[in-house]
Image (tube, rainbow, N blue to C red; front, side):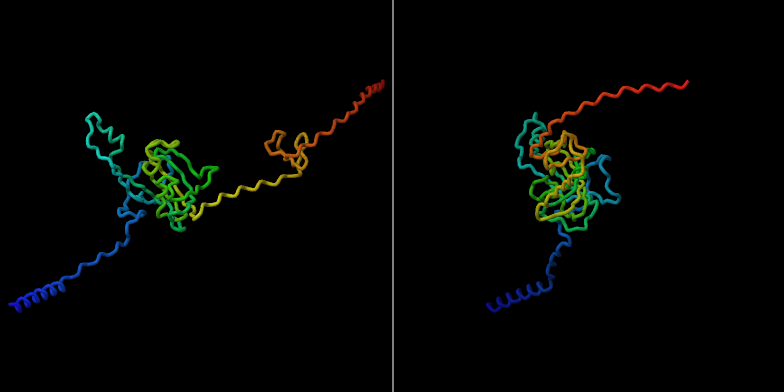
Length: 283
């Protein structure tokens, strides 16, 4: 009996081994060819953006559609257990208890040929800011303005900027559609109304590990020494400048001016000679 049981168990083991040999091993999953990233989400399709006023510069012909860098959903961490009928929807509206979904959308209008934008760098950019109704808020391209440098990812700018350059290359241009949740929020900011979507046209000029040095101020032109003195004389060692009046705002030398010399008496003009008598005309 013991021998029979041993044979039976051996037969079962052999049968299981044979079945295992005939059953193909499960295929290992292949790694995704393009794993989703913040710059290239799994759903990388065209999305709807705010309708823009024709006052905003049109995108270049042939520009791609707007896509999402990322999409977020806010979920309130408060649950309303009871609300009186007379409260209506005011409670949720006031406390912001509804879930909200929003995206940071972009259109690359020019693909740069420089290095890829990296985190924890100083970006130097040109920018122009518009509201959806066409209002132009400001631009670094306006006369007298200069490019802006800021440290990305250090919360010194709005969240839409801290996260909106992903995938860009130096020299590239991008239009960003920033929802108010990633902009200035539900409060007014300067000339920007509450809950305003922001439209930025951006150009990534350069990036660096350190804060870029400010531009060297222009060297003042050398004073022209071959000019007429200022009215009333000039201080010793100072140089007058043509075209500036005595009330000029140019800085004056600290050396006190030499007092003018005492006025010299001017001799009186001799009286005019009496007129000569006219010669008689011939008769």
